[in-house]
Image (cartoon, rainbow, N blue to C red; front, side, top):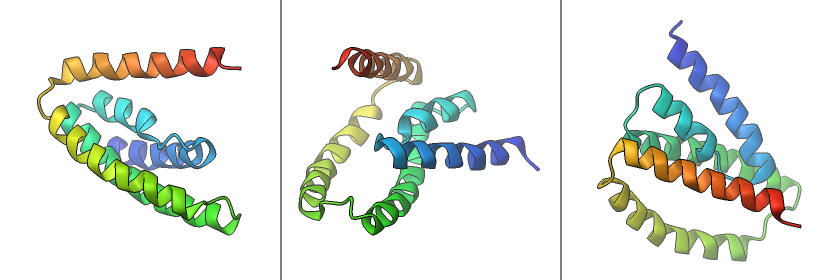
Length: 119
């Protein structure tokens, strides 16, 4: 069996658990893996969104069964996200993979520092 296929399935399991538990989406875990496997930044982002979509639907079903979903606010967030996603997809198309890696790393470091020092 191809090691990339096994890595994708195992990563999907880990990301699914992490995304459903934290609500962070999973791209922060998927994108580095895809970059490591040789994907361009643009293809890594696009591919991770397909995975996130599938994981998100599953997590939504599970959280809804537990009554953890506020549909009104979720839909409003999603509507804003549609606009942001269209802008972001066009922006990433103009950034090299190397610069994307740097920007992504800075975002992850910033998030980690924020979570670490937040009360």
